[in-house]
Length: 197
Image 1 (cartoon, one colour):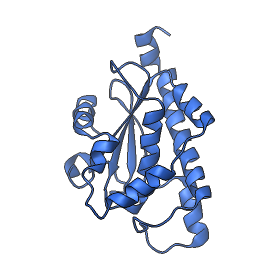
Image 2 (image 1 turned 120 degrees about the vertical axis):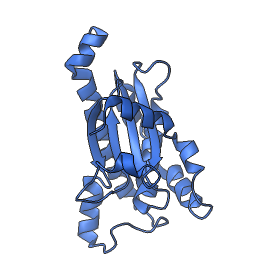
Image 3 (image 1 turned 45 degrees about the vertical axis):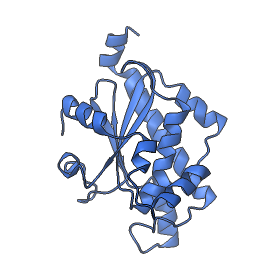
């Protein structure tokens, strides 16, 4: 596992969503834009994010070529837009950054899922860049839908449509994990002592 300093250094190099999209090939970009336009958060979902009392840093290991990334990474971007982290590193908010799996191969090597470098994989870090949690490639709703449909490919084509009900379920799955991480940060003895609360 990496040290907080290593996480901090890579996070500083990682790109916010808009900058990350600039690394897409011309043929990839329309798929990303299409899904981003489809992702909308309800007022309740935005309220959950805005209730976070600590900063949540999310470092997303991704690939612009990956269908699962196309279908899920725009969700993380919408989370960051709903409650953007601003100012000092200890102010509340959501900061989501993206790195390319292949360009950061040495850094991402320890974060394997089922012996593979799956993407997207989200690494959650607190305001001091301590590692909190990791979740990768698909949420439970996505896996349930795949199992039900008995999809063959392990990674759908980047332009593959995601049914609206699956998109909603996937947003809720990821939101629940972001909230879980936010509560870990809020209840952290280290951070409570640091903030005096």
